[in-house]
Length: 152
Image (tube, rainbow, N blue to C red):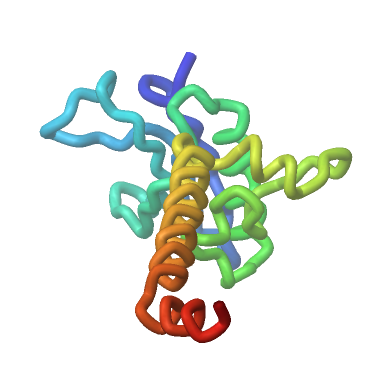
């Protein structure tokens, strides 16, 4: 079972009794078939009217994480917390429940968006190569040659 055909839906009752639907699942797109979509959105509806839509870092197979996220958002909406934002629903954000027995750093590492850690690795390699090139350039600059000839 995935979020492609089975989105998670939770109802939040706001102050004053109004209800909104929090939906976490693969969004409808008239140009892309649902089976080809890898995006998971959080959408908030009041009746048929869309109030908010944010793309998450979840994959369609992460149903238990989507359920926890939907319940956390419903809890935040029902408690009147107004600081709920797009960054709040990302892993490690205030709306995202982190298990108490798992260190936050390792939890974020294992729940990061796909491709994040390879991208970080590529960035570190690129930074090292730039530093190496700069070091080689400084060693071969005319000023370094003059300094070596004066010293030697």
